[in-house]
Image 1 (cartoon, rainbow, N blue to C red):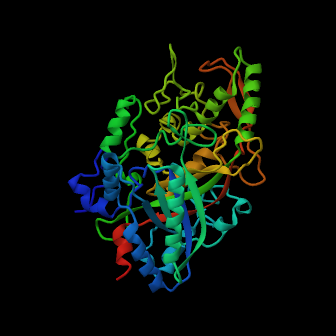
Image 2: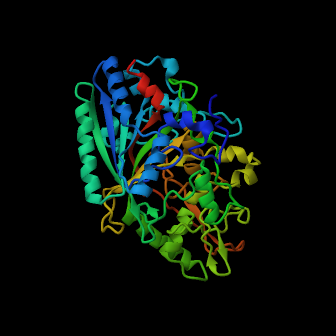
Image 3: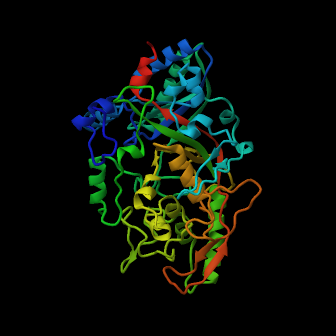
Length: 483
């Protein structure tokens, strides 16, 4: 009997999912938890038979969902260190394997590839069908050469729990072993290094200094229970059904599932971001009865303070760090948390229900699962702009068009979401080439309906350097390739 993907609040050892989770790759329902990684992008050079045999061989080191759970348990009990491995394929990779087209993953964006800027996608809600080409507003002239080459797949290698230098050294050795196994079959296009950064509370942060990955959807009982302990979920349900991220693997059997992967390398202009926040803070201070600093201006921009505290939540004792147990029911006009803030654009928490009478299930179905990691320098206060620093954005979803592309195009890039004149997401919003975005409206006083709204343009501090769409197939599919 195939697994029921409408379920949530399950555990890895649920007997109804053992067969599926033994074939499902890890890092999907729960992050792999390692602090150091290598992303090895490759292109096939052999014939389809050789390509398939090599992939089947490599699949033996790919970590399943069950094995990931076992590894984490052995690390807790015996401090055992394990290499974590994911393997994913682009649509061109499927072609190079000689896989018949009916067994390709069917997502339209996946089959087009991220470099294709001509394929139109229907990204508008409520039946307003006006297909849009290049919905992400990508500019290939900004892309790094490696991403402009043909990419057939990517192997993700990750290590943690040991000294950083030791982890880095071991990962380099693993990359060399992987490259040696490719001889005559594939070639490495490039290797991207990733590393986790943490603040003084050991929270994972990105290069602007904000806690990252706070509001990921939760599928497992253990994670939902932990969320309940950290503030409950009376005002926000963090759970998500498995079909948010899992889809049947078209090349596998009834218990074979995979997920679609969006990979984007995002460079961050740290100095420019904080310099602009200083100007925004001064502008707000000039029009406000109280002085505003860059930290508060940053919270208006992101929707949270650096430690994850929502800017929409304030009590008698100051800011209430609820992390995830909040919504915008008491801020329907965006007077506390601006409509354009990153956290609100990407997770409206009921705004579409209030503004458009849209079913809440539709809004929740747009959520994505983030598994990104930082790259480059760890200097969070560089003295120049556009340093080698940023985020290797990885999102997992059941439908690239209806989840990631919709979120980026219809919410983040849309100056009219959630209301006309809102402006685009100041963090990740991407305007069309040659079309400067309009200024956003910023409240000069928190929560006051009579407060003046200041027009101020804030954008352009995150740049896309390349990316690709992948499918992370089941182990059953990968291992059947040797037949």
